Every structure is written in structure tokens, then in C-alpha cells.
Image 1 (cartoon, rainbow, N blue to C red):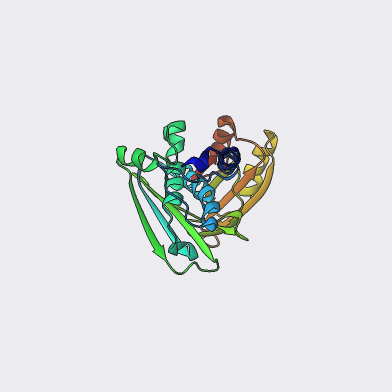
Image 2 (image 1 turned 90 degrees about the vertical axis):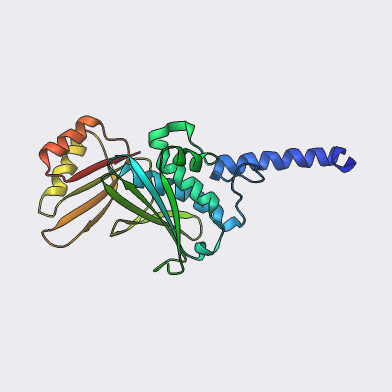
Length: 245
């Protein structure tokens, strides 16, 4: 017990604590916590931030009150202890509604208090990826699935929204649109955004088939004001439109 009282030990303890704070603020990873799920493998740490982003995206693309959150771990990650990753995903889902009151310590408790059922599934197959995870949000009006992975173990990517395959970097400002697959639609909403000074940084497009339903996910340089959303709804025959922040 006296060893901890040496000058060298006190300095090392201070350094360790400072490094743990740095890890938290840089990547959201918490080490040596007494009331938080531990991360047993360093390769899991990067999935914590990805999980929160996927949860936040899934709920912002959904209508209605959240009833359930389903986490699916695929590939290599399915063999690890993912409690901390699940906590982060639940936090991402609840944060838009609950605000700063939900965190990675109390996320599951907050979900339970609101009647939100959290479940997990594990699969060995991750399609074309070493590891992949999916967050499905169930609401009173349906469900929305968002999947993602880490390229080279650290670069986050959204790989799927429902049945649409993507390669999208999560961004602070995005806009999701679903509309009839007919000519001229991209020009219409692109012109409205341009006239309102909103620049499109990236666009991911998918469709069910010619003449069916088209889906576009735009990465933007700034938020979309409510008035702009109203103009797109009025001038473009949109089935679904969701701003993401």
C-alpha cells in the first residue's frame, strides 16, 4: 500500500488519469469505470462512436415514438463483448428525444423507463465486411434499419439503410428523401437547396427499379431550414423527407 504514496507513483497515476480523459474526449472510450460496461478489446473501441451515429441516424429517419431497438452484430465483432457498443447505440437512439440527460452509463435504464425494449442478435456472416453492425429502430409507425462498419478498423461508414446499400461517411448535416423514380426530381430538390444557399457535398442514390421508388441521402455543408423542407415537400412529390443532424 505504501508503494502508491511514492512521488513516482503519484505522477504516473496523474498521467494515467489524464490519458483516460483524453481517450474519452477523442473517441468516447471510457476505461476503468465502475458503472460503465468495459471494453475488453481495443478493436471494439472504435465501434462505440459508430454505434451512436447509427442509432442517431436510424431514429431520425423514423416516424413515431420508439418502441424497440434491435442491435445485430455480424462477422468478427459478433464474438466480442459488445455491452459498451450497445449502450452507445441506445444512447444515439434516445438522445434526440431525451437530450443531454441520456449517456452511455444510463442509456439502458432510460430505455427501460420509457418502455423501449433493447435486443441483440449475432451472426457470423457480415457479407463483404470483416465486421458490421446494424441498428434497427421500431416505432409505432414501422421500422428503420441502418448498418455500418469501419474501414481499415477506424474509418466509419454507413453501409445500408433498410435494403439500400451505401458507402457513406456519417456527417453532421444530411438529408434523406424518398420519392417516385421519374426524371427531373433530383434537379427540382437540388435547385431548391441551391437557391437557399445549401451546398450538396455528397449524394448517395438508390432505387427499387425503373419507375419505382428512389432514395437519396445527401451530405450537406449546413442544416436545412424548415422553410426549405416545406418548399421541397410542396414542389417535389416526396414520400419521405428527414433532415439529419
